[in-house]
Length: 598
Ligand code: C2E
Ligand code: MG
Ligand code: MG
Image (tube, rainbow, N blue to C red):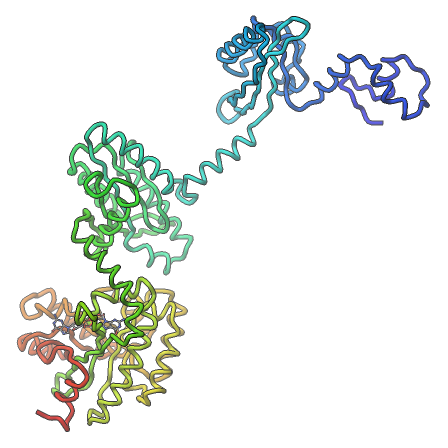
């Protein structure tokens, strides 16, 4: 039979010892009676010694240990006997001052026969790594007119650690260990109260890493994670102890700068942040240049609560990004109006397609050597019932944000192909129509299917359709993009890179994606005749393109001087206001079709 008692006795032996029975073959039904006969105290002692909670009985009001169970001995690693007669304070388990005060108070209440509820306490015992947490309840008890304090406790460490971990996870980002947005919200609330009291301001900063997506896409998630950790450390180094840094998600961080007595104080921190990212980040023995775009909103000027301040700092951050990144912007009213307009765009765009409010305008592309019209770029406009003809820069970003660019882009393809056939029928037989594609059409839409459908429906020969891609499309999810682009090439359509020179301008992808043409961005063309740097870039791009067997077209040619320069550099084609602005299809036919010659 198993040993049941601390002394090592089993039930049979103990029973014999206690009630003096020699007969070991008594029936089970005697047990209840036997138990009754057991000394009550002995039974109680056994129970107490077998409970995993520790129990301490102290004499009141002195606080001397009268008794304790085996669990306390296990916890302290010494015999319970040694503790008996010692003051409770000598156990060093807990700070007994408050505990004894509570018990003494309850004791006097007990004297006036008021039942007192137990007290609860969670406390740390020991220090450092070896420390444990105890959960304790204590109350007074009267036994035969003597007052005792009864303390019952247990090792709470595992529970406490799990609780702490949950609390940490709720308020922190696992990857960087930084607080998350919940904690910042909390801190902002406190900082606002303090700022009000001291008549100070505070700033909320949204910090976004400029090149993170590229790093993540090209070097993989693991490196991406390392970059985030390193960037978080870099940000931390730029801040003071009172500032709060948190990861809001993705590559976006929030910084709360409290106690600003003038707004310029935040500029010092902002300059520090910008300088902090001048040095490349070291990740896996690689040096990565990372810059940040920062948006700032101020309390109380820009808002009185977290959501408003965050929204405005976000707008300012987008403005910083829009202005080329690696900079900061303070929120201002103009940004608010822009955001307001974006909202109007979002709402209106949903119906614009169904209502047929989009139109395409066409801008001619001229071969420089011959002066012949060789192509035309289809450029979308929104014929808004109230706003009039809205240029694409005002609604394409919104359409990209809400994904509507996918169906809109598909419509552009069908419409442009349909019109191209009309141009052919009007006598412009070898005219290539160029259509702009958005990165989202590659990512979310089935671009190959849209192109196939547009060609089939219109009957346009594939070689007369040119798709204008941006560099950002090609550096994305490379393998998938590569197979999509290859599929398009196999269909026989032409490919060009729009706004060339403003992105990564990588030679590798030009070869890999077998593009046909580079469209040199207008920013290099505008001052070509007067800016030596632009001149050098344009000449280099043309030479490089030619040596790779690619054609070149210059966008944004506005005067004869620029045209002449481009001729000198052997640029193949030009497009720009000097030739014509983008015009409606009918006007285009009237102006350029041989049968409509002026
Ligand atoms: P983009 O593809 O680079 O188109 C050239 C832009 O430059 C056009 O602006 C055109 O009107 C303008 N432009 C042409 N020649 C000159 C010039 O000599 N001087 C100046 N200052 N500007 C000139 P637009 O039509 O406002 O289009 C802006 C951008 O919107 C386009 O830039 C393109 O990225 C985008 N876009 C236009 N249509 C579509 C479309 O159907 N789908 C997509 N995804 N994007 C489109
Ligand atoms: Mg274009
Ligand atoms: Mg362009």
